[in-house]
Image 1 (spheres, rainbow, N blue to C red):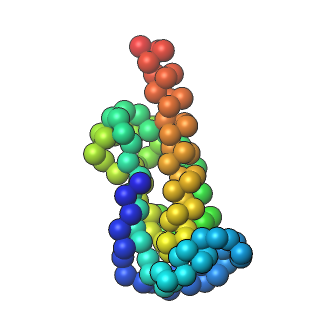
Image 2 (image 1 turned 90 degrees about the vertical axis):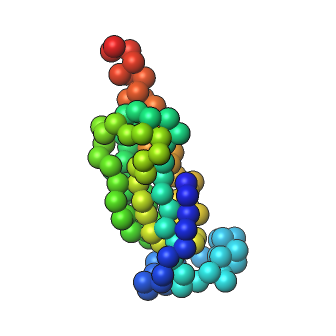
Length: 117
């Protein structure tokens, strides 16, 4: 997942609503009020699935989904599959679950397509 800083848009409420007492709170304290943009990309070209689940997970963490491909699309390895924006903590938490949602279902879909061919 590629992450870059963007301008603040008032995400402090999402940061405060997130888990209290989390170690990430102290790690990212100096970044409060700053926003970051992250792109999820696949490592090999092919069919992608699980994007809707990844969107839902990102939103539940306080991120905004900027854009993304549709489930069942074929993508290149250089093409972003999903682009999200949010506070540092939300992006770090999304890094744990958003790519996994896409990877799991994409792997199953690709294996099914290979078996069918």
